[in-house]
Length: 547
Image (cartoon, rainbow, N blue to C red; front, side):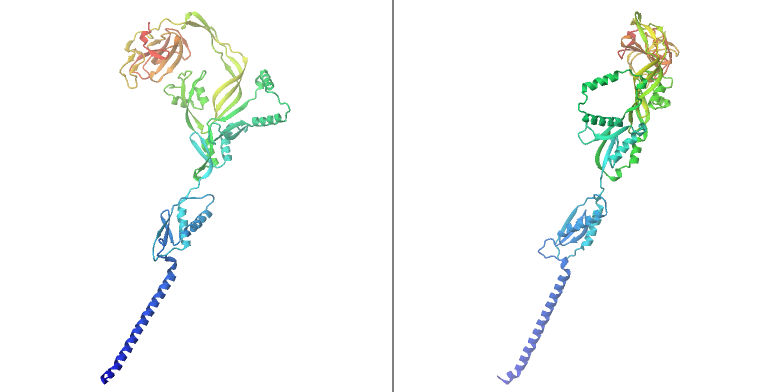
């Protein structure tokens, strides 16, 4: 080795040493930095471990929705059910009875490296709030009472019976009748209806059944029947009857069914009684029977006379208007929703007239008659079964009569031969409208004329075209004042637009007898007489029958 070479060797050696030291330092620095990064990463994993799922889990963050509202996030779906149970328990503790909640639970999972979950208590509180908004109204068991179109919800059968007793109480002050709820045999479903019976009858049946069970040889049916017939055959007088209400029931059908109802639709017993017993105006009709008068009908139906006339102004325009047996009148009376029908045995005394007796004379026409004996009014004691609807009397059945003074019937001799013809019902007059189709002369008039018209001055005498019995005399709506006469063989004559009626219903008139004065009342175009002939209820051309 040369000196030069030896001289340079230390420098090279020193460089290598120097270079080797620097590489070692860098390596140590890098190694320390890597260790530090690993420590920081480990620390992050430790701190954020609850919110980080492994990449191998497809849904490592689960969001909970109730009815579309997010209530929190979890990393384990198995916890959701437990938290829901706790939220529902809180709601149940705050409510009495059964609580119905409508809710839709949805879990939505996502995959995230970093994410946070909510505390269980927070999620439970949010679930509680969401579920509370979905609480449904709890329906309560009720007894649904149906009367006509009225439905009432009560809580117990005791309240139902109290309601029914309140309806009958004004008509059963002594509480002689029991009201029970029984299955309606006419219905397939379990529908209850009412059974009203006298308390003493129920007790008597129970006692009789008990005696029959004790008896060794109970009375044979035939023997018992004969005893009853014998007892009924005994002579009866007024004192032998027991008076008072012996039958009572509800007029309307009452149905009671078990159901469920919202609490606000359940009424108190006091309000139910008010609904059922409150009186309101109800429309009804009444058919006129023999012996009726307007004032009597008003009294029977609980309608004032003025109201009765107002409701039937087309047929009874005033208090003096005539009514006929069979006429149907409109009536309005205040009635409760649940009406009571009761039958009472009643004693009363009255003056009465015997029915008219007739002696037929085959030589006379039916238009001829003569009174042989005048009537004598009688006086009697009466026992009757009277049916009432609430306070109004609806039917009378006489079960016993005792004459104190026996009535003497009016005796009338009458002809049986039919009159040969009909005569023109007035003198003079101009035939202004014939029978059949026509152009209506006035608004409200018919396009088919059912009779004939004679124009004549107001006040012209009108005569019976044939003899018979007056069956209507008074106002007749479009006819104005009118008279109807019943003739033999089902024939009837009608006289319309009169000024004045001179006969009354039930009166017998002869052919040619003056019955009215012509006028211009009702639907009329001027002073005239409208005349009809009906055969078996059908109008025919009068000119074909007038002689």
